[in-house]
Length: 422
Image (cartoon, rainbow, N blue to C red; front, side, top):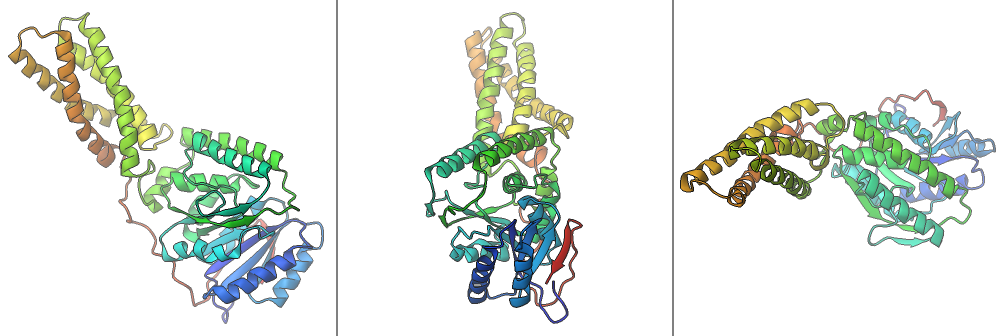
């Protein structure tokens, strides 16, 4: 790590390895040479040895003694996610990255990967083999599995990033400190879990199209890994649904917007929910009007039921609020909005009855529909700015953009890292 004469690194690139004695040397030397010639700030390359049983640790220690800025972290247990979590949390660099030891991704993408994090533009960055502009050489089996997996993530978890598993990622250290304690997986699903948490927390994920060449000597069990990932998807989905993951709190501290997405995305979902609740409202009103003498009573009951459904749907789907925390308060606030909406529709009905002594049910329903449409804008603004708003507005409370360090910074080592050689 840093001492009094060595500046703290701006970038710490972690290479997780397990029994890679024949490949780690060429990988580290190639990466080191690339950084020396292209990266203008202090850097560190950390070889994270995942309980190797061959000579990987010995080779890595030799590299650390030979090349400046190379370090070795030794872990007693295997697991790529475990290694990244331990080393990233122990690092004193403001920008943290990792790449696979086979260097399948062209290193020319490294600077575009970390630059948005250094400037403060983004919070995480990923290399994507599926983004437009990427050039990928790999077998049909891996291509189908990769694309299928990302489709599952979009459907099950609402993922908006294009490639969860490319071994080429970077993250700001302040963001890592928030998210990593929540990531449970210690193996290959680690990447996906981290990205889903980041997205749900309103963080900005930058994607870099990469040139990627499949390693024919890869020892990854593709089918076994895919099954583990599917189990991880179900676990994260349950945790998000139950509110066990405090993504709303993280969004309040670090997020760049509401967890539900942009205003346009929220408007689209709000409109869809509005259609559903309006159908419920009008259907119940038409049904109740035939059985009660007062149209006002029918409208009140129908609108109350539709409002409860509308609040629940908008809470969960439009604004991305998961779990039961705050649900009762939101329903109370929804009833306040219901009161405003009811007054608008009641006033419309009152005006109708002043104009027509005994209007037909179809006419009354049409008037209620028009009044409901007029109140839609009021309802959306109230929900976004009052009911489901985040405690901070865009940009407030966010840490300043990372600045290249020129002084030594103290470090802390995770208990999982048994030793580290600088």
